[in-house]
Length: 110
Length: 113
Image 1 (cartoon, one colour):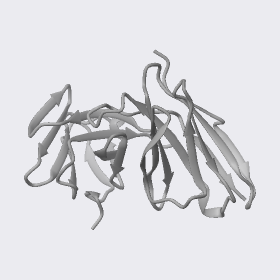
Image 2 (tube, helix red, strand yellow; image 1 turned 90 degrees about the vertical axis):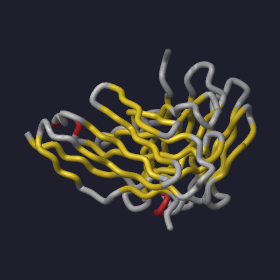
Image 3 (cartoon, one colour; image 1 turned 45 degrees about the vertical axis):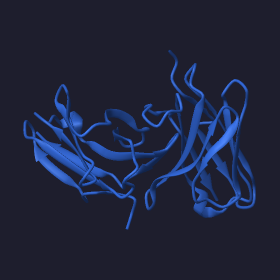
Image 4 (cartoon, chains in turn blue, purple; image 1 turned 45 degrees about the horizontal axis):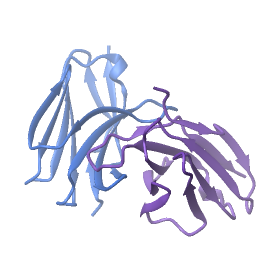
């Protein structure tokens, strides 16, 4: 079993729709969870971080964490073509060690 | 604040050679983590340096090594290059706590011929 798994893409949604990205992790001791966005040819940039169970909202983005189910998700409301990118779920397992999922490619169609 | 910088941005080497990559973290950050990104394996953790000490290590062979200087700048070295080492090498800096966000540099694209 991979340490961090993301739902396989590509995920295609129409402009204005909600995009839902999911991630599960295996290390129950993990304390912090991150969503990064990566455009083709660029380095990852932080979208959201979440530490506590529940929802965390930031503009059009909502991160959800359920530690009992070892599940993290990212919702993107009112999706825009500029949101088209690969979304990486990352779990901190120790100090500065992040374990990444394989990424979900999101395509927002105008 | 200036972001994370990496040099060089692009590198072409041949099998058997060695290479050194450099990373300058955000001012005040004491942790530097290195990652390898390939299309097949995704983003994989190589190692982390914190206050000049290797604090965490991933599952890479000993050909991959690194160090950190007193000003937190870090270098990564790969010896006896193999074709499979062709990848984007990313470094990220943070304050070093598990809840701290890691900020990535632009990466070094290494091609091994």
